Length: 175
Image 1 (cartoon, helix red, strand yellow):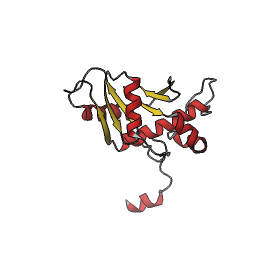
Image 2 (cartoon, rainbow, N blue to C red; image 1 turned 120 degrees about the vertical axis):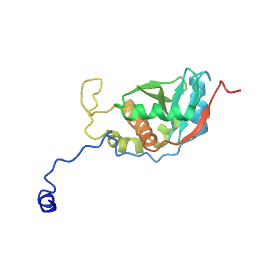
Image 3 (cartoon, rainbow, N blue to C red; image 1 turned 90 degrees about the horizontal axis):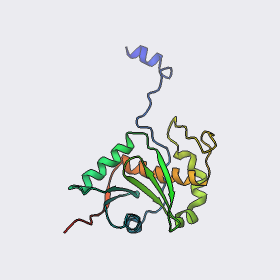
Image 4 (cartoon, one colour; image 1 turned 120 degrees about the horizontal axis):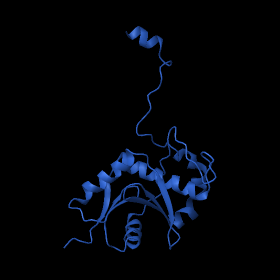
């Protein structure tokens, strides 16, 4: 059997990785205190929050007993479903990239000022294997500024999903 496997090596259909992930792993600095500050501001400090190592934030409007466990479960749901995203421009000039489940990534205006060339050069690596994203004009994988910002933020979420490490927790219900 090894003979046949070796003979046909390279001719077999390659198995697809699931979930598909982008090749981009942004290496820009992450300020967890600033992320927590903005997340609390955006939510009026009314929900529980968990911040992951690369900046993804999970939130819980109904209180949860084990925030860390639920935070990881939320991120896992995003990771194993198609990680659709929706950008929001916030009142402070930052961008919030929200996902299908209660989580988001903040891309700070200052990050864009400091790292725009890096984002511009790498945004296509933020597209997952075999993924086709349609822009508002119906063109596949053609990205405007906001789409590039989203791919940057979402790439950070993928990093958190692959190795989930919670670094900050906020619980307004804790005594």
